[in-house]
Length: 195
Ligand code: HEC
Image (cartoon, rainbow, N blue to C red; front, side, top):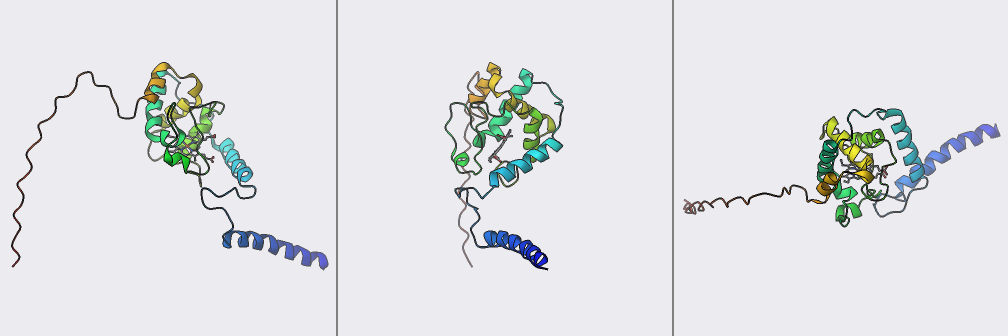
């Protein structure tokens, strides 16, 4: 009888404690708050378990120079704002995100992860973190190209390295375009007289 009462009390106390923790405003919700107890451990365990189950085990494209160059271009457009570029200070956006986006082109980045693991993260994103999923905006080939770029960040061909440090959208023109003539402004409409 005592055991049963203890069991029921135990079953109630834990969920109640968890509920109070969240409902009383103690749980960390701001990006600058400190970690919740076990947050890192639980989040990483959950993510790692899901990825091991789900990630593609074979890579459908090769890390050729063309694919890495395409990956570099995609990275500049879609990833650099959070994950950084060589020789460029961290953006204001990256500085304010929690969990912090790791620098993927510095140190070992994710060069020790399987490309399939990064592909999974690029495809799906990482929930409750700033990491967006790109399955709705990039093609599978594009996601593989950028996954191969980050997997090979420590051994990129010079062309891809140059592409990464050239600002996005800048193509160095061989001849300067002649300025197009500016059309004269339309005549100012005369105010209609109210009746
Ligand atoms: C808005 C910011 C943002 C953008 C844009 C973004 N990411 Fe992320 N990314 C994050 C954050 C934050 C994390 C860390 C998540 C965590 O720790 O749980 C992350 C994690 C990752 C990881 C896992 C890193 C690790 O150490 O395991 C990879 C790989 C990654 N991003 C690749 C990319 C690629 C490739 C792109 C562009 C196609 C991209 N991300 C765009 C914010 C971003």
